[in-house]
Length: 132
Image (tube, rainbow, N blue to C red; front, side):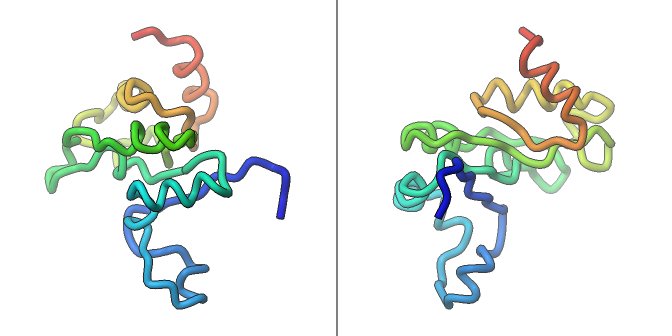
């Protein structure tokens, strides 16, 4: 319906509202399977995912090992944007309290293509200028 590149947003739980309306039983988790990513690649340039889908957290709010979602999406020629990055400790994992720049770096090293951030100047500066 548009010539603009689309990004499919994917939350960590539940299902897209259009699926609810059409009584499609698939969930967001179904969209990040190889089959789901293949389907997304037919209509979107990338995915915008909740960052916990890239790096889950344990019950202590500490980051666990990264998932393969970045690699899986890139294998389908999809861009990967993570959301939402914020600088306040209440939104940061235990690993990066008082260190939002460290969190950006951690995710950038996974190979993501972009972020949704409440602090876009910091996000862009770190993505373009930081080699650490």
